[in-house]
Image (cartoon, rainbow, N blue to C red; front, side, top):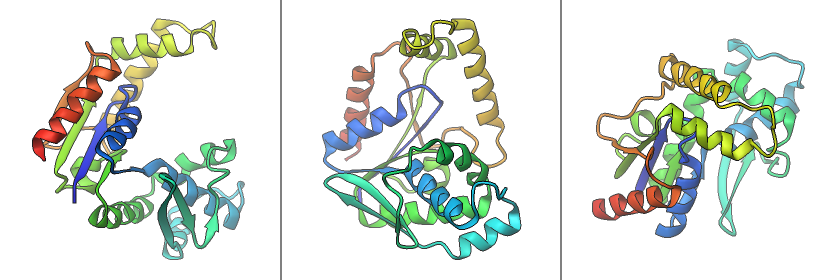
Length: 222
């Protein structure tokens, strides 16, 4: 199987690169975030939004989880215990609750099993957290995308300046540096590259240039 693991810091285009790379290589792009969101929908359905998670509750919840991932017309679909939540995965309640349950290691290990099972039988690009170091240790290609905090802050400001007139470069830079620090220091899922990952710094590249470089790296590995 051709498995491509993509990790990297926030704001460096990981999701876009993964999407476009999968299209160019004509393989599947596995979206880990959708799996966590679908599982969150099942949690809300079972316990309600007001039930705060705890280790005991999550442990029992994970034991009863049956998750399947399919592709319909090239669109990833996730079904949990036979339930179809695909139309509501982006709702605010799901976005708010997902971080509350996704940090528990039992749940994370359940998702890792789903990821590994999928990768064993599908050529795929997989982007998320700890893909190269933990989830797909034997991936054919491991890429770690990065860019300087200042460059990422400038990109973010350009994205939102028409929506948020009060946004400033200084505030965005501060938030990015804070998130980078927290991501590096996480007990589980720290945002650091695998020892054999190829570091792709796109501080001085356009997204298109980064995509072309990543495609070239993959084809060389093939």
